[in-house]
Every structure is written in structure tokens, then in C-alpha cells.
Length: 116
Length: 115
Image: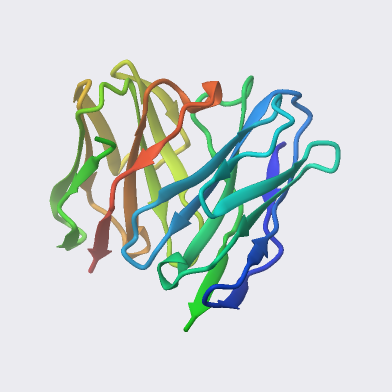
């Protein structure tokens, strides 16, 4: 069975600094997709970044980038120049290409607080 | 436009009531999802529709009844709920099913309280 583990329940960072959120996963599939979603207090889940497992290049999206280590099954999210609006719950998620058709498997989440 | 609209935003209902949650998207997506999220927990998948047909039912109690009347609309009918069903109900949609790498776009959710 596939699992996603986020080992940091809560983190905090000063505004303008850099923070890294960790995520590990377990799967026997060779092709899959990984996502980071953020959920601010407004409740809406927003996609931060997506990584395709067959692509070796790490995905980046403005201040957000990932460190994807396929062999180690690790998928960490780096937020540079943190802003107050980055305060949110961050969920790492996995879906296997051959797996259950719609089932995004989420980690338990990391609550990030950005302090002024 | 990547908007998924859910109504109502808040709902309070008694255990004998019948109510419905509504979800709408106009992005041409053919896969739609219902999730249940308890406080400080990740979303849990309830149902998946693909091309208006129920694709996945994750062993959800029959007091939750999904309906997909057309490709833009997804309903969740609620009947005889229990207090433990109080949660945030999230709807999502994607162009095609998620296992093909399609991004799921989420609505803002309906906060349900069962008294």
C-alpha cells in the first residue's frame, strides 16, 4: 500500500527567510505524480507544485521549489523569501499512474506559520 | 478560470433532516470528487465520478448519496446524518482522472454541523 509521511506537524519561519518541509512516500510503482497543496485558514486547497516521477528535473514555481529524490522516495518543498500569506497547512500528496483511479493519498500535513 | 464553486458555505442540520451540497465547475473537467475533512486532518476521499459515472465509492455510509446530473455539476445528498459526520466537505475536479497526473482543483468547501 502507498503511504505518505510528513514528519513535521508544525513549523515556523520568519518573514523573508527560507523553510523546507519534508515528505517521504512509499510505493512499488515506477510512475507516479507528487503534489504539494496548501490550505490556508480560508479552507480552500490550492495546488503549490506538481512533480512527475519520470522527470528528473526538480519542479519550481516562483518562490516554491522541490527536492525530488526518487531513490530515497523523498519530496521536500522549499519556500524561499517566506511571506505572511504562506501561513497555511501544507499537504504532500501522491497518486500512482496504475493505482486507484482518483485516489490522491495525502500526508497528515505540516502547519506552517510565517512570523513578521 | 480554475474555479470550483461549492454551496452552501455553511450548513447546520438535525439528524432527521435531508439536505444537499452542491458543487459546480465550468472548466470542462470530466472527473469530480467528494472529500471529507475533519479538523487538522487531511482530506479523505469519499466518491469519484468520471464522465458522470460513479467510479469510486470508498465504503461511504448510505446516508451520503452522490449524484452527477451533468458534467458540470456534482451533488451530495445527506439524510439521517450523525454528529460524527460534522466536517468540512470538499469538492474537487480534474480534467481527467488523477492517476493520469491531472491536477485536482478544489472548492472552498461546505462546513457541515450535525446537531
